[in-house]
Length: 477
Ligand code: AMP
Image 1 (cartoon, rainbow, N blue to C red):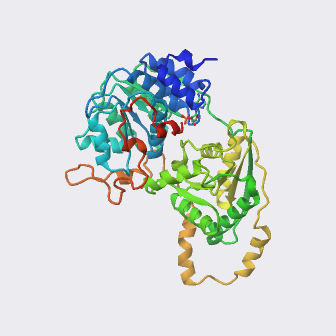
Image 2: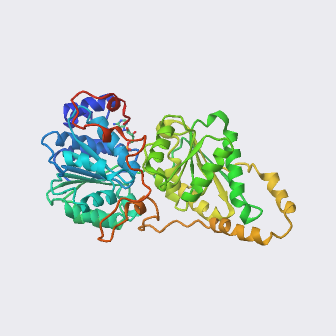
Image 3: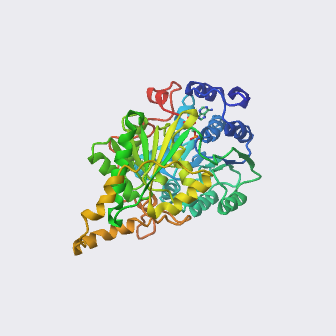
């Protein structure tokens, strides 16, 4: 087995890796790092949880140790699809580069342009950005990409899902042809293959085994429910969810509740809180500072239940959780495997419980087909009660009630946006306002200055003195 010491990384990087507690490189690190250090383009096929972030950050820091950044001309660029992922990459950089004097700028939406410009003006060795915000800076004339030596595209399949591929192509064209490219994707859709063929030069392909089926350490259960009336369905679901959570008692230390739609993420989180559960929502329409705070609370163990959408949760480095609840059956079977993969990690046991309504049975059948097994059924906690329901409500609903019922009925038809199209409002909408001249504008109602939640790397000078700061030392990997 390869040791980190065999990988020819900078000694300061090795020291930081050792302090992070890593003993041996993961397969993607073992395969990708040597090629990256040779200056080769790398096409990494790996998903989150494989250690892929370190597989590009460690060689980047090693290579950037030589040379200096010039004002407004960053030397390297990492593109990530969401703000959280970009912030996560930045945290990784902070951890591994703590003994290096490297200047890093994080360019994400929801943060004031001025703070970000200040860091760029000082000269950034590493720029970590979401595509929309990077182009915003470029169009403001505050940034030149002609000095880019290394460019990383992380989670390219997510970029495709979110409609960022045209932006990625444009950014590629703004960087020098001679750049080194490290490109990561969990899957290789035809569109992704096309991009890699156009922009990567003789890449070394490295691939780590994909998690095709759910881990055996996850105990899966499904609770089937037929609502007495369609408009009753979502209320029933929330009641079932509460009872299923309560039934787990203290064995539920922390859990994620997945919903298919952002609107339901909010409704479910509010409903749980109202009923005395320690729960908070995370999705793309929430303020960045609130998302960061919620996520940190969950990581620190201060928040027990995180209610999330797939887009918000995917790729996030969230610690192992004891329980995953699917408030909605995911429409794409592979999302089920991703969701429940949040629990039962590293040989620990975990439990994944899905609520399946009659309208979702067709999706559930596909999931069981993918799993190749039938998931054990849980007793429906509303059993006796729902059978009595039609008797309680035999009268025709009033006109007003009928009108009220409409949105609930619509809610029963889950509609996932087609792949390739950016989900409305998910991050891009706020990134994308332009003025009459076509220049991108700072979105209205965004936080300027980030309130109380300014990441420490935005507030301090990145040219570190060589001594790790307290924050850097405690930053999580
Ligand atoms: P990633 O796939 O980059 O999101 O990494 C998943 C998790 O694995 C993160 O929490 C990393 O801190 C952790 N990690 C990365 N490399 C190693 C390693 N060599 N040994 C142990 N843990 C690691």
